[in-house]
Image (tube, one colour):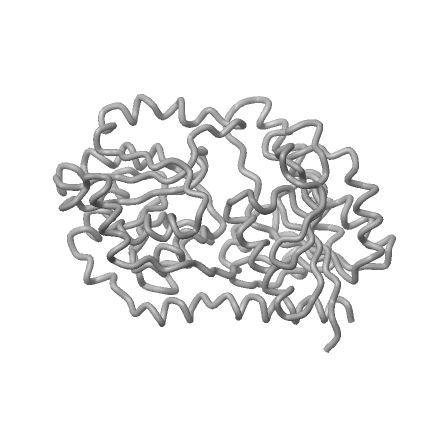
Length: 381
C-alpha cells in the first residue's frame, strides 16, 4: 500500500507532556515507522522551541503565539500555514479540545481533503465568570468543528453516550482505544528511589497530573485522614506541576492539604517516562479521583508497572479498571468512598494483581495504530 501524507493539528506537541500530547505523539511516530509521512502543526508555546524540526521522523511545524487564552494559544499565522500544508497532505487529523477545529474543517474541505476529529474529552473549565465565558465560546467553536468533521474518533462509547457535546454526532463516531507504550521499571529501581526518599517500609499511594479542578485532588486530600487512621504507615506521592497558570486550584486546596501535609511527598513534574515508570513501580497503589476524565492513560501506565488503580466510577475513566480488573471503582466526588477504596486495595493487594502480559496485550498500542492507519486509508479513499 502506498505512503499516506497525514497532517496533524493540535495546540501542544513534543516536548509538552500531557495525556493528549502523548497520544498524538505515539500515533504520529507509529505511523511514520510504517512508512507514512506525518507533519504536526502546533503552537510554539515556548520561545526556545524550533519553528521547524524533525523528531523521531515526524516533522513539527510550530507557530508563534501572541496570546494564551486559558489552555489555548492564539497563533496569527495559523490560517496561512494550515492552507499551505493541506495542499501537501492527503488527510488531516485535528486533536480536540482546541480553538481551531472549525477552521481546520472548512479549509480541509476547500482543499478537497477530509478531516478526522479526534476528541480527547469535553472542555471542562474551573469556576469563575471568565472561565464560563471561555467555555461557552470555545464550546461553540468545537461544535462547529464536530459538525464539519467527516469522522470523529473517541476512546470509548461509554464516554460518548454520556457526553452532551458528542451525543448529536454519534453517527460520525468511531471508537479506538488510546495507544499506550511505556517503560517498565525494575523492582531494584523502585526500591532505590524509595530508599532515596526515606520511605522504606511505608505503603505508598501515588497520584499524578496537572493540578486542576477536574482531577479531583481536593477529594483525595479530604479522604487522607481516614486512610491514615486505617493504614498508619501510608504515604502519598504526587508527581506533577502545581503551578498551572490558567487555574488557582492549588491555592484553593491549601486548607485541605495543611492537616496532612507531612503525609504528602511532592516529587514535582516528571518529564522523563523512565522516571514516571519508577514512580508507578514504587507505589503500592495509584489513585485517580477525577470529577471528569475521558480515559487517563496514567491508569494503564501504572498497571504496566504492576500497580493497581483506584478510580472514580465516571464515564470513560472507569473503562480501564472494568476491562482489566486491576483495581477498584469508587463513587465520584465522595471522599468517604474514595478512602474506602484506597484502604481496601492497600489491605488486600493480591485481589487486584493481574498478569503483566495480559494487561499489555489488552491495551496494545499496535492495535490502535492499526485502526488509525486503516481509518486514514478509508478516508483518503
